[in-house]
Length: 118
Image (cartoon, rainbow, N blue to C red; front, side):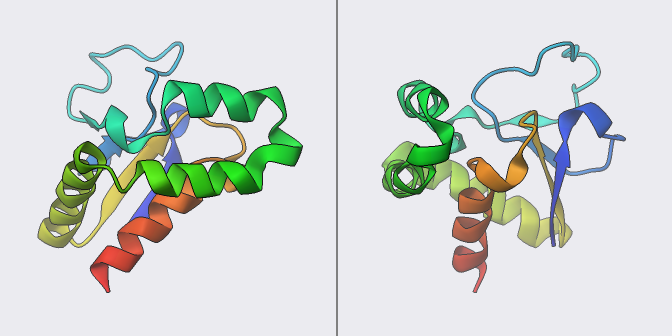
């Protein structure tokens, strides 16, 4: 099972992975010392900034572009790491700082991971 949780409410469940490109504001690195941080599975800075300019009209295109980014070798390696962690522990906590998880990179990443597991 993949569990999605905002990093601000995280209660030290393990194993956990931060799936954002930027470190979350107000969260100390010591609080998250048992959390793996995989920046490469998050959208590139350019893509993220492009989405934030017009989030309501660009989300569909963002999804397509992000799926293309996830096909690159560095992203594929980190997707494999996530999949291996999930297989070892039968569950994995995916942590993010985004407020609107439904309209973020998280559902696309989750779909990629679930497709790899099946």
